[in-house]
Image 1 (cartoon, rainbow, N blue to C red):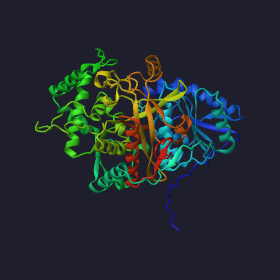
Image 2 (tube, rainbow, N blue to C red):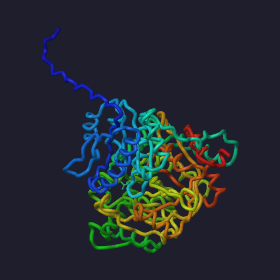
Image 3 (cartoon, rainbow, N blue to C red):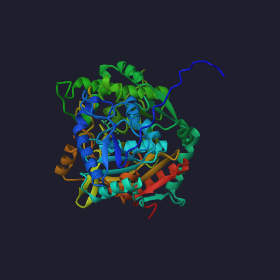
Image 4 (cartoon, rainbow, N blue to C red):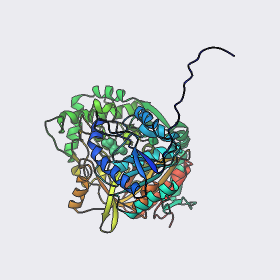
Length: 549
Ligand SMILES: C[C@H](O)[C@@H](O)[C@@H](O)C(=O)CO
């Protein structure tokens, strides 16, 4: 035996889980300004949860104290997450309470190996994107195959929530109603089924490239699709750096940027301009955004991309105004023309160029196939993701607030470009400002969908919805209750209740695309389902559709 004196690490004994005690953590944003501003809402949610557990004779223990230096108790980095998890008894029941947008990787490492039951909980409220954070975290755990239960409540007084908490403390699980989810039946031959299959075969054979600027650095683990899964669809990634985008932006002239601005104004878009760069939208911010729009298309041209995704938040937010304006423009067929550097070609002239916001690769797959399918059907291919932000009943039906953090293609808005207003992004999230494409999405018929990873494979949920028109004061109330600078869609999902959707959905986002009427939307849904099935993906039809009637 060797006598060498190695330094063998000694592991501290694992902390033991106390009786009738649940530990609580909260994953936060990576931007301190957002953590500080969202903290009072988080405190209110934690009070609701503490009372709900107390009603069952259980104690809630916060795993980490509020940090006196920052004034909040969010876990605000992956390292902090590891340190906090080291103090939590591995077998203890654990609640992850989310009242804000959060970066999932702050807590996923700890959640991966935690042995006790995990419950994610959010306040069903609009003022902060806590529901968005909850859905993103749930999707991350789904991708990693980690079991969890999930619950939400407006104010803790509803019996549905109280029953769910009781179920969790007594059984470690909460059963949700998934009766709205149906496997795709065998599709009879139809022009839509044939088109979907042909487009799937084309994609698999000819292949496509999605350009990803700084994959994953918004903490959306669920939105990173491993190449092994993606490549099976015929889709390959071009990994790009946002520093290349910033560098390309320097090469776009002021005159080109001003052409974009003029085009938008001629199309009828208006801007709420001011002079204080820190809090208001300025012409200088718009110039950078237009340069980003031009630069993104030139890089897409350089690499022969079929879609592009700008992640925006970390890194780029400290250099440049927000990417949203560029993103919304790219996804619209009518958009300012952009020439190749030599001026010889108009890039993707007269076409939308699919953009997947926040570099969400589930959105990338969806946007790419939607663009091809809707174009082949002679429909407007403008598509976008939305955050699943909030919702409330109106006139006896549940109307979701779908609201992405900046922009939608103008053809989705009432009035198109003339209905689009550029507002400054909130400094809490976007220190360097930038314009949104704000407005109200027009009433009409849509197909909604989400591609996600579960059980180690890519899957898709899809269904039908109607975008409804609400009275102006109700629209304003909903905008004021959330982020009034962001575009809103009033969506009624067909045959899916609020709680069914929340329990089932595996992403903070969902994709939408319009059709001119219900019958065409039904046909587009059939073709889209056939396309995804043709790509070899399990297809889940949600709610009431012509496919499962
Ligand atoms: C600005 C916010 O952080 C948003 O980016 C966030 O709510 C999301 O959109 C998450 O999908």
